[in-house]
Image 1 (cartoon, rainbow, N blue to C red):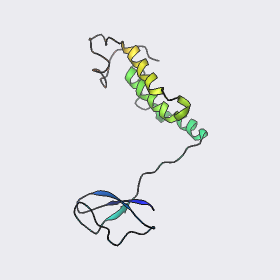
Image 2 (image 1 turned 120 degrees about the horizontal axis):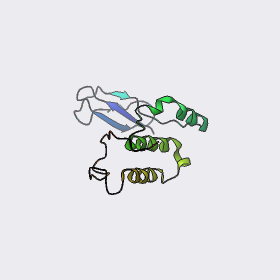
Image 3 (image 1 turned 60 degrees about the vertical axis):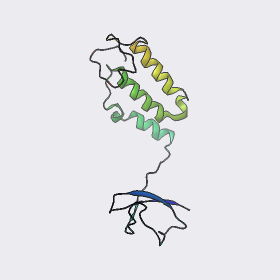
Image 4 (image 1 turned 180 degrees about the vertical axis):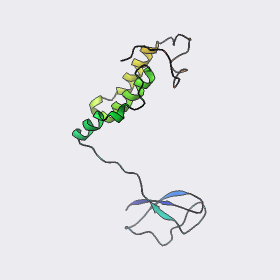
Length: 132
């Protein structure tokens, strides 16, 4: 029995319905407003990539878009994305290792302004901290 997603044009609602078979049930209505003129939505789905496809995707220059090699936080975001792409090959503690390296780079006591890494998360730093 598939679970279908539906959209309601009357209230812009979105809902899911467990359906017997592959056709819409006769009593189908939006749970928010009761509108019976709903339409089936295309759900997101996942695809499996072969190892060759994963390596090819990593070689794509677009994966480096927005990367600032002078910003440790930018490098950390890229490294976490790389870890997700590598999956099990990266190891279970990949993100923790990246966070530890970021904290070491920024200094456990904080940056030169005295702010902790948590307080400066997401801020752009103009100086080159030498990551690279």
